[in-house]
Image (cartoon, rainbow, N blue to C red; front, side):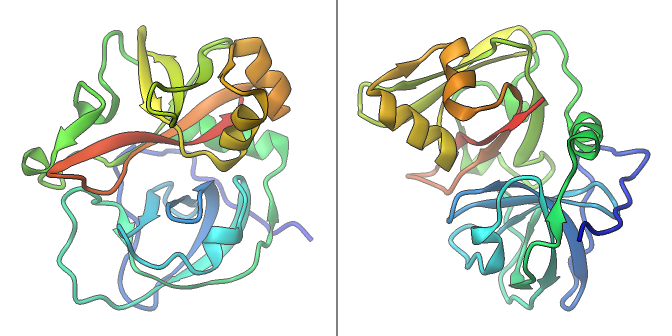
Length: 230
């Protein structure tokens, strides 16, 4: 049975969700890779994600656009400047249902960051950000809207999957961590152009979840965690 959902009428990107131990958040899943989890708190519209390297209990098995309750746990760690939206996940219930196409479109449209000509992803240019530049004031995860035909997938020179996307008039190449997209790319052997992406995924990518990943040698790389339907 689908849960009764309240989708906020006004959503301001960068808002933080309740994060005190014991708080229960009803979230719509935006990305779930097994190591990274991102959800949207349906009470506030705030984006939440797991702590870097921390456990991802129930959400790891949830699929994008499913809805589940998560409980905030206790942590002795200081806030992570590279992940201001991070919460300690104590537990997560099973999926309560999946957002209908209409509700999903409505929610994603309101969550998407405003597109401005030439605007950089996550407030910085380049494929990564120096950890010393992060103070927790800039979001570490963002949902961006994509025009039709704005996404290509490929295997990079190092053998790792890459997502090419165009946002705010700028074409960018970022590591790909969307499990479904990685699988589709692996089955083709190298490259998926826009129309082939749609056929392989069974959807037209209308949104991408882009986030800062875990720190590597003092830098925090950007990564595409999920491609969502428009």
